Image (cartoon, rainbow, N blue to C red; front, top):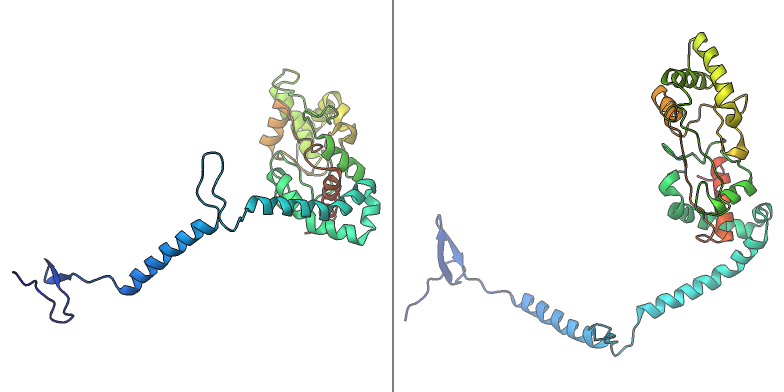
Length: 290
């Protein structure tokens, strides 16, 4: 019977493996580790018995305690609906001004609006509502359809170029692509449009562009280019641009046209939620909320 080699310092047997003078010890697993493993297995077995665990053919094992998280979630939803019932009903029957005059309802607006905006509007208009290329800012004083409460509320309800039967409709023609203007004429009228927001443009180009503008653009943007809210046509004199105001972006807009889109929120959000968003958007634009 052979006697295995032992380490002279620890007394542990070796495995017989050695690397560069370093001998591997055959050290036993500490008892505390075995105890931890055993306790874990026992607890897992107890948990399987007490709590929902194993799937069955058409249902699952419910556990001796009968805990059911789905039932708890359903109860919480019922509680939440009951809690919002009073203020939601009140908001639906009250005007925006009446809601603003009610401190309790305005507290609901302040608490609810940021999450409501973040979940439904921030993907396009940005978390800070400042917009981005192709999506208008909601924190300036420039409105395509108007910034009055009832107007914003209606825009939220029906959307823009959406599938709603009463949607707002707005589309800018593709003057260059569809052959209404030549490329040089597009550049000329684009230079004129940029000059309205302060860009330096040669006087002869500006005069020629003004004629082209009057013949092709004034019917939507107005003779003075300040826009027509009823048509959703933006003001071109305020240096606020949805798609960009540099020479290349303005040329692209006039040449290829634009067709913005906003979903209709009626059916997705209730009237109370749309009123909350209307107040939130107005207050963000006027600097009352950050």
